[in-house]
Image (cartoon, rainbow, N blue to C red; front, side, top):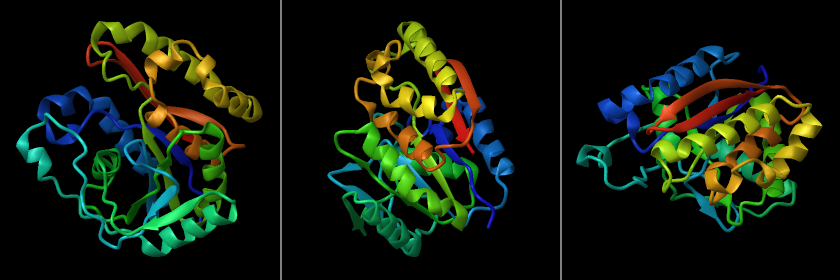
Length: 264
């Protein structure tokens, strides 16, 4: 097996691929997901998604062979609550991930009931519309400790040599109360800080990210860091390796700047 890179992806808004006007707005994001698949060293054995839309008291690992759907959004067209993404789960890999997390001394449990949230099924659908690649998730842990989520990534690192593609799925800007022109200055400033930080020497990069609240407009861009913390898991799994920006957009929703990164 060739070692897989990891990614921190901005997953866009709601069920955007099923809404023509939103899909047009996110055309650059869609292109980046398509390109990600082309850039992988080989087809993944499975995708492991750490999504900003699932959190638990421990690191919960989705273990169903056929995970259901979770429509964790509101105010969208009725048909978007009928979406089905029928990718198989990965129970064996879920158990392997559970054991790696447990060995690292982190709280962990298997969850046989959890389904795919939109932070997972949206990018997975754009990457693999035929749902051919097994897919499973690991939750965030409540409290959003950067160090703990970095440790989660470090624990999961061996999976990269076992054909598993690890994706931290969130958004580099996530303030649902500040879209439009008011988002322009804070999202640009935070995005520039993130780009500079991700390009830094790995040790410096880790230190700066652990102190991310010192970034410009940090708490304006992320009042809660549920959509930022997936970055730490992706980074921990490829900590010593260089990062590359693979997606960058400006003016989303009238003002938002957002980016995604490949690590390794």
